[in-house]
Amino acid sequence: MNTVDPETFLGDQIDRKFWSVFPTSIRSAYAAVDLLIEEQPILQVVSAEQNRGRVISWATDLALVRAITTGALPFEFEWRTWDKPTGRYLAIHLSHSVLSVSQVADPNRQPRAVRFRENGRLNNSMLFPFEELEEELRVKGLPHFLLIHGYQNLDFVHLAVPHPNHRTKFSYRSQNLLDLPHAVSSDLPPVENTEADLDGVISLKEEIEKWIKDNGTND
Image (cartoon, rainbow, N blue to C red; front, side, top):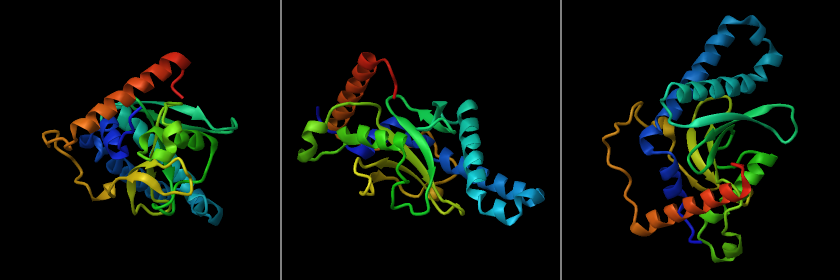
């Protein structure tokens, strides 16, 4: 199977005209958390301050779910269990891949390794044009993308394609989406791709569809 450029495939899965929805939603989540903490003394104690990130995570999930249910983002979602059934995480279904959300302190490093992200990274092996990975270039599951954002402060929002090697940064990471205009016109021309790029994306999507059919799962 031909490899596919990660940026090209991400652009196929999430049209760039929707990219500005992510920072807009996340900004609203952070603002809601600030207001909630200001109004609720129980969230102002030291122990609560140290767990502000959890509240931000919940608010971000809610903002993204609302963006999907209102049609601002044309995707579907589900709540998946972690490796151990002690909690759930938001999985956003794109046409041939999955997007999850993570707070990170350093936008240059991948989030900490947990089972579902580990599996997702390995599913990205078909996106890398390296000869040494040739035997790995087959679909084993849906490619996994990340929406990463600042931890305590909202300094950045990026869409990213994790490299299969966790010690490597990312195979592709978007610009800081906070720098995008609040609204992106649907009349903007699409990003230009070569014929080979488009053929590769089509081939990969066909392989993914075959894998889903053969395995009866979207994981």
